[in-house]
Image (cartoon, rainbow, N blue to C red):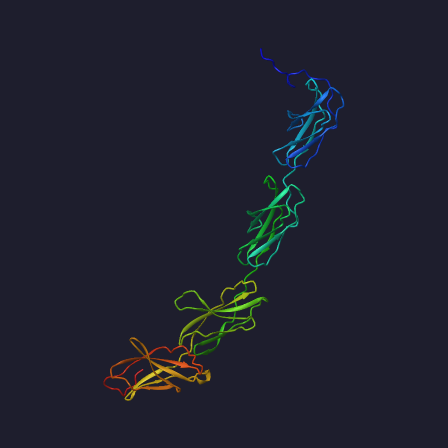
Length: 395
């Protein structure tokens, strides 16, 4: 026959009193500390701690404390902000449980952390919004969740989860200029449970400069177009960039960059008689670039090159432009394999006497400075020498 060892539940109940002074501390993270007064009766062997979700029960045992002088325990919970009810019984050396219980007391586990105070969002920063707030006063806070929305009404989407109670700065980057955003921050505990977010704060990213106005052509030279514009109202303009748009509709090219006080720029890479379209953009000290100004179209200066056929040959004429620093011109005749230089002349005229009636000729003139630098070539000009009437001019 097997022998059944009696347990606390199978032994008769005892009439000894329950301990006094049961107390519990609220506000701990998923734990409730319990303490009571010791019983100095020699027949007391320890205590049983019972817990319930309501004051009226039902209660179930959550701890057995051995020793009448051991009068404290820590009850663990799985829920934040949970209110629980406790009572304590004593039991004897023989294992009999007292009928009497202590008074029923309650305690509540810590709520999820409150939102951090003094959330600030700093406006007018280029492509970003810096945020800062005060560290949570809740020692159970383990970090924060940053939320953003384009509207104060929401919805707010999470941007990032920050670790550490004292990690109280966040920079939202990669933003477009002149965008409005609303931010909220919630604290979270070590169990990744978030508290409620705080009130939203608003921030605006720095706008790009306004498009410059008043773009105009102020001077045309051979191979050079000079343009001017009005100054921007912004006080932190770092430079202006002159854009030239190609005739085929491709992307523009920066042809000049000038400091903000200049407000005049040159395009010195235009061909003779070239159709060009320009716009100006302003760039501030943070690198934000304005939209292009209204475009200005212009045909660049030409040589005024002309030809005529005479009995003695083909006469060419052009503007020599000595006032622009040119000392002469190279006269070129195009052939199927390239160009042939005919002469370097210091005047604005040249006679090509090596021509044949009925033949077609194509000429280009290039002005040259004393330092051998050259203007862009003239637009090509063609002429056919008449067969029957060589004394008639041909254009």
